[in-house]
Every structure is written in C-alpha cells, then in structure tokens.
Length: 229
Image (tube, rainbow, N blue to C red; front, side, top):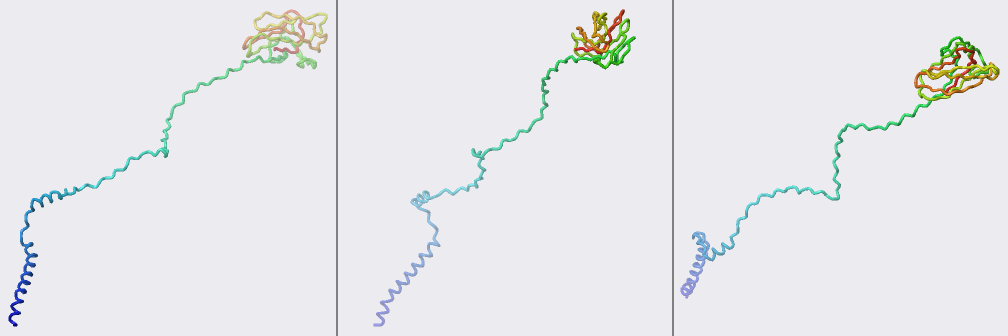
C-alpha cells in the first residue's frame, strides 16, 4: 500500500517542476533572443505614429512695441529758438514844426544900444518909457538896428512922442531899410511931458533891419517910445 501512494504522487511532482521551468524560461528567453523585425502591420502603425521631432525654436526676441501717441495726452510743442534779427528802421512821422509868429517889439530910442547923433536924453515921468529924446532933427538922428527878425512882412509901427507944437506942427522922417521915407507931420498934445501917438505901416525883412528917425532940415518932435506889432 505505501509503495502505491508514492508512485501516484510522483507524476504530479514532475508536472509542478516542469511548470516552474517553463515560467523561468519565459523571463530568460526574451532577453537572450534577438529582437524580431517589425511586421508590415507594425511598420504601418509605426509610420502612422511617428511624430516629427520637435524643432528647436530660438527664443523669440521681444521688440518694443512702437509708441503711439495717446490722443488724450498733449505732446509738448518744442519751443522755437528765437533768432536775432536786426530791427528795420521805423519811419517816424515828424510833426510839422509850428510856424513862427512875429514877436511884438518895444523900442526905447534913448537906449545906448542904438546909434545916435546930436541928441540929449531927459527924464519924463509921464512918458511911456520914463524918458524922452530931445533935439532930434536939423541933422540929428537916432538909428535902430534890429539884428534878427524871425518873421518878415508888413507891420504897424506906433511912434510915441511929445511936442508942444499945436500952432506949428513938426515933421518926423522915418525910413526902414531902403524903403521910401515916411514923413509924419504931428502937432502933439500941447505939452512936452504929455505923450501923443502916430502910426504908420512898414515892411520888415527877415533878419537884420535898419530904422532911422530924423529930420534933415527942421526940428522934430521928442521921441518917447516906438512899438512894432
């Protein structure tokens, strides 16, 4: 009986050992055997699954974006550099000079400024000038020289004189420059201390003028003052 049970279990033991050997060779054989070439199906699959190797892309250089003017931001306007220019001469309108006017003249015949001959000067408180010229006439004279007359033309001359000659008028000769002589016949106010007046028209030249008071032959009235207007 014992020998039958040992012979019955021996085949099962051999099968177990064989299984272990087969399992061990399944791990060792693939490592030893050369790899098989892929089949056509595998090639087709491989070709369909092959991916193009990624190309190395150089890192993109980031360029600064062009600056655009913000319409809401005011751009400062550059200040133009001032250029130095030579100012052109400005034409100035000159005001017309006022026309000169004739200045009234007051002449005292007894003043030492004037040229005279054969006369005498006496005080006369009632006269216009305070004095009077005596002994005029009979070749005695007074010459007044005006040096600078600005405005020429016709003027009115007033001769202030004294003469106590109501009954016997006296003559006074007056000449201006080279004009004809004016002969004035006067009577006076009846007193040598009371002045009287006589007027005549004369023409003055521009610049120098010469006025003569005389009577070549007879006595003349006394002279107090001469006005030219």
